[in-house]
Length: 550
Image 1 (cartoon, one colour):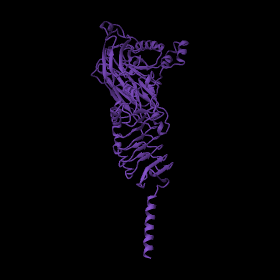
Image 2 (cartoon, one colour):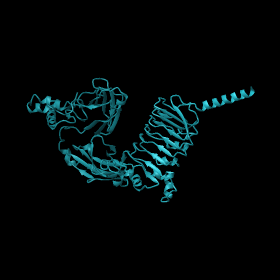
Image 3 (cartoon, helix red, strand yellow):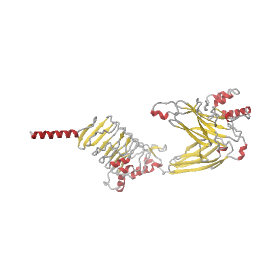
Image 4 (cartoon, helix red, strand yellow):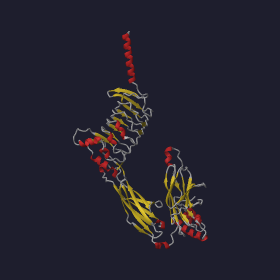
């Protein structure tokens, strides 16, 4: 009997050990083969790595299971793990300690996920990793030291990502490349290393020169899965193979101006030109007397990949427009600038200023208001004030709903200022008006716009503030008795504007103040003159494209 009891206990213990080793994750299947024990989970809604996973797996394959993250230490219990496949999930985040405890891992596949970046230092915990598959993700950058943490890597797949620029130093710092370079031409000393870099939107400008040169010269044991890498941009190189592309080194901007001293009479049109040569293309900015230009838009023309020009046009030269203009060109290599001086001869001051804004006082001021920026939640207004008395701050900007008597007020000083207005409502009409300080806003000196409809969905939020500008800019002159034509007014209205000003001046000689300044759209001017001029005037009013005041 004692012998039987011992035998039964031995059988029972063996059964318990065997059943424990065969434990599997619910909803998955487990198998044993010559490579060890494997876990296979497909199309299971688990969203995270199972916490009760047995420790004896050498291969784990979790695919199409809606995983969204690899948390720190989530696989640290699987010390024997050699193969980890996590393809076709929705992984967006990989932590610096996601691979902690996986010192025996030799193969990691993360194909078809949503990774936009990878913490490359995480591979310090996987010194034996040979295969890394990251294709069909959204990686847009590869740091120069990324591969330095992968000393045993022999296969790297980065195809079908969003890489546009890679430095050649990425591969120079790769331990296997360094070993291959030392044993170059000595067959058998170094294993072949396979790289897959095709189907990325490569931007073939000077940034990519080192990488293009690397691709052209690479040879075994370094092997490209596809050596026909293709440029996606710029336009002049789109669709060309690396082997057919000649790239130049990057260059700091060089600026020049055909004329650096401009003298024109009062009221004349001034065109300031600046030529730029840079690689890559430079960002161009104009400043006037050390202030950013906001009143006039610059026209930029691209001549070729390296050369461009910028023209700043001043339609009607006025005293405040005199001074030093600077054209600044910048790229990542540095910046360069050229100065242009604008003068108005004193002899031209005796002549009367041209319409549509005649003035009869030395205390003249000009203000230009525009919508400088639109966001999903609001806008940024920018204004430029120039006056003969720069120490005075005597204008007020009123902003709010068009039909609301209560508006936010901002005091406007000389030079350029800006202010952002957030949390604007959809399908709402707003206005920004300029008045004398302390005076209430009134129609005729306003930027008016309407916000678009709210789609109501989160992904449509960026398009919530679809601004329709009714009056895009306003030019106000002091003193009063003047009609200021809005942006977009036709020449016929400018002519009428001058005539109406003379008539108003005769009627209200001596009694005007700033509060009497009016601005007229095409509609307003044409309507005012209907009583005297019909026929052609009526035809001009029809189909008008000028901005209307409300």
